[in-house]
Image (cartoon, rainbow, N blue to C red; front, side):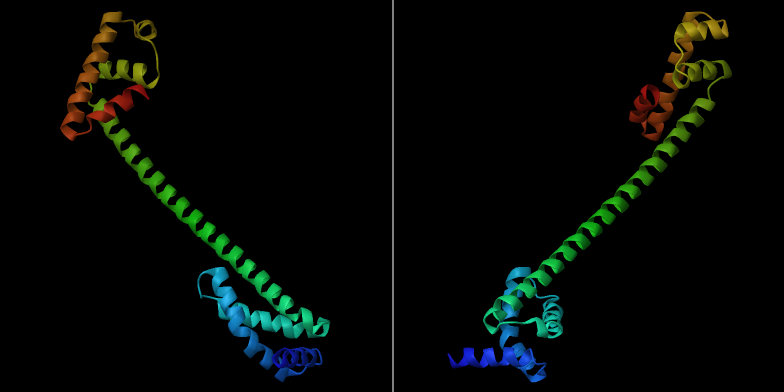
Amino acid sequence: MEKKNNLDREINELTNSNESSLEVLFNYYYPRLYHFSKSFLKIETGIDDILQEVFLKVWQNRKKITSASTFNAYIFTITRNLLLNELRSRLNNQKVKDKIQQLSVAKEYEFFEEVEYNDLKAKIEEIVDELPERRKEVFILSRKEGLSHKEITERLGISPKTVEFHISQSISYLKSKLEELGLIALLYFYLFF
């Protein structure tokens, strides 16, 4: 009972701007608030800073303290609110870090995927350039421009069988060259996508 009366007296003195009362209250409440904060945050990092801010707010608002009986609830409420702010900040920082990491990994993967695709496409185009002129022309009209055999026949004035022959020979040549390079699976994607 005497301890409570002493605390009540210190709280009343605090409202009269008595700095030594703040020190007494600090020494009494700090361990309790520290334990409360640690159980709230689950880690100790930053608790000292938060508690300093709690006592700074108590000092700044000392004139508004109207009752010693509600001081305990008041100081724990300030602590809880600052802890919630800290948790939000940590959560937002972690989300931002996670998002940045996801974006950088995605961009890096996208970049390498694009470079790899462009390199392979260039290699296939080199192989297509090695084809005899007429065969290359038929193959490009078929696979790059998407013309049907009938449209190629009409455009070039050659028979449908000749169109089929040139396409078949082009695919066989591409297949053999890509097999040499170990890239045969890519032929499927190049021809059909």
